[in-house]
Length: 370
Image 1 (cartoon, rainbow, N blue to C red):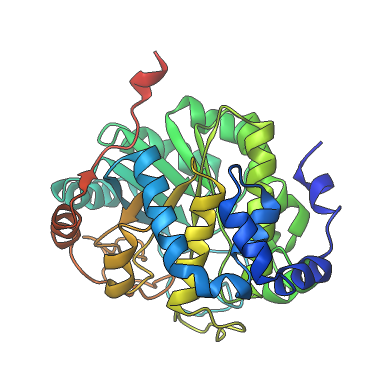
Image 2 (tube, rainbow, N blue to C red; image 1 turned 90 degrees about the horizontal axis):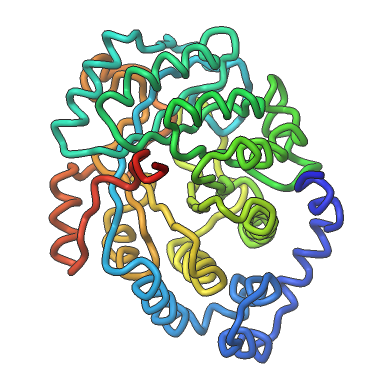
């Protein structure tokens, strides 16, 4: 049994129609409901909810402080490799981009983490392309063993792995795994992923089940906003989270909101999502699910990130580099995408403090298991 069985009970067009036929009365009913469910989430992401954005923002603010206090966790992404065997039409790492590839050696990893540690981080997100012959479980294990000596909280965002491979990484101290379906529109998924292992929709769809069975402490989900209708994709992402929370109830969950950003050789967004839409989606997630961690990356603008601190965010990156070696080793290597908020870690730290919140460097420590 996996999420695939739940997913197959729903039809994309039917869900989309339900979202866009939501009435004002249904939005009001959902806002006033004492316990929110997925039907309420549908109402809150609908066009009919847009006039209620201020009320949703206030509710999101209150619920976030109630559950998480006035804290924002900080993390740094570190790209280990831009090698990739997939063709993805929206990604700078796509195999058909004929730009020099790089995978960090252990010496180069040490140089990178020296710079990141100097900025104050104790929570690091390791990111790679999907190159199974070179950037594989053995490389991940070696890298995690090395990096765990310097960081107490390690998350990864790499290609989908097998359950036993996730178990090996969990035993080495990996705290969280992020995996994005990109889009839940199965019929067009192949168009965005025409070649490579990532073209297997079902294998990717069932990845969070394998992560949950391996006992990883936290699973992060999301969709690439801009590929398909963001409202419909976000419903399926919420459906996925709801299934996982019920099935692997001891695991924590987070959601990210990557909007399609400029990158080498990529397509333009098929569906435009403006800032007001993103704020609505963030608030809808928080109102629906008080326990969900909400992560906002440097893909977003300074203005949006300034405001989202008080609207539901619990985790933010800062001073990010999206290319392997970008902090110290190879600043000109191929980026996965262009970041939008170029402010330094210290500037974001001060912004959080000035907003009345406490920046948190460490999200988790393996000693909590003992």
